[in-house]
Image (cartoon, rainbow, N blue to C red; front, side, top):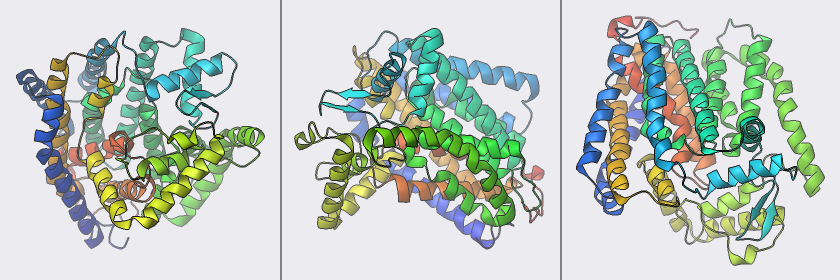
Length: 478
């Protein structure tokens, strides 16, 4: 990490890699438009929607330059959060949803009914008890206990979670040395179309984003002269444990982030923070361990999904998206099923190295170079929206993503405008390591890279900050 502390050679190299990565994803996002438009359609109302969104996104400029701030900013942010999510809510109101949103609702109802965390899968005819992580179903069950499980409750809870994420994103911007950049990034987060269209569904991605930002916020507060407080340690421990129990694929992300920030934070403050945070994390995770050992007679630290997810991401017919389990798995105990799936996936990768490499690149560019998951989910609803809806939403979703990638590729070179822009680069490096090493080998789609989006918003916001607000000589301790 030599050179990162003062935005030196190492930081400049990382900035160049970031710009190249964004440019490659941008090219992919553009060249796939004809193919995707053939699937979803393309309409003039969609282009008008995109133009309206671009106008709204441009509001980030006066926010970053602090000509729009204070009370006016807060009112605008809250209104934008709610209004951006109201249209999607009205669109899906009354529809039946399949896939993960329906399954999470089923899990919550099982908890409320006293059956425990259980998912009865009609395809494999297995009652899964640890296939899905527990945090989000428990959260839904808590909501259901008080207000019931309904589309209204899902929307309101996601709205509250997204508001919390926006607040944390501002805090992250402040700890990077630019509250204005944090506010501009929070604005982009509030109006991001893919996040807005996720709000009516009972799906965990909004909670995952909140937890990732909470972990990042605490770790960014470390510096060499820092004395860790128990409050910070509790927040880190609880946030990291919740992240593990919400999205097991990101279980190692806090450790990766801590490692990449080690040079700027110092090992003594980091070690002190981790030692203090460990009991709080254990407090949340231990009951899940005990429960699983009681059920399965073996140690299941997170879920039984690992082997199945590895198979979904690596087999002859894999695309990286979810696919049904083979008929041979029908009725098999879930721990045994996961182990068998992992063996078969490993055998396929070893026997077909060329296909494995091609599939890995396909998964990567499809997930980080397209924004169509929302359309696929709407397509699975009953009743389905009108075809004109897809033709209108495709330009908005793909066009906003293209605009973000273009802005990130253009503005990443301006990261020195943030007093601690080196740390944002390190966070983006941690996100890249997480995806390449621990997410990409498994089932990997667009929603699995959503956790890094707030940091891309920050990278764009950094390019909008007035140049004169950046210090000439950043402090080595930061």
